[in-house]
Length: 229
Image (cartoon, rainbow, N blue to C red):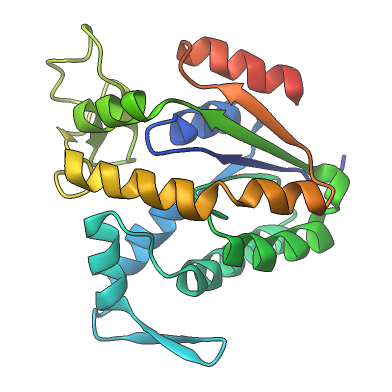
């Protein structure tokens, strides 16, 4: 069986991580999530360290500050980290689900040719999960993340008072700096101005983007993705 890549993108709170985890469990694919790659880097690297990419230096401390305020971390910096992970997965003959990157024209132009070369264009499926700006703000300002495995717990009557993750039992916490209303508004602007233009790249490069209504129940969104797979 050929190795596969599933790319999922969409605005903050669209359910990219949730759907990626569901697909990972059902299909047995590795879930390569840019936010976790970045968090791992930010926790393990000295803030004074710099990475040289395409002849320019990127300081870890500066990237942490961008991340905390809702601005996109520098595309060359993210791309450098993600391509390292992609090459490792290819060497291990792993199929994987990619969420959180690419999310800018720079990233998509750098990453997609490498993904196509390593896996074949015909083995790449792309999904755009769409939700309104209002839903984005509500979901992000109400959700909690578990400490251990970073599960995102959506807000509803059943989960409102949860303090422990129902999946792994670790403490649930809000991402105060990332999910406050002003940061979410910044992230929405960044998404519209820097991520949505990728649609034109995909179209011109012969990649099909499957658009999914992300405002339905999680199970319905999952079913729609599975049908397209």
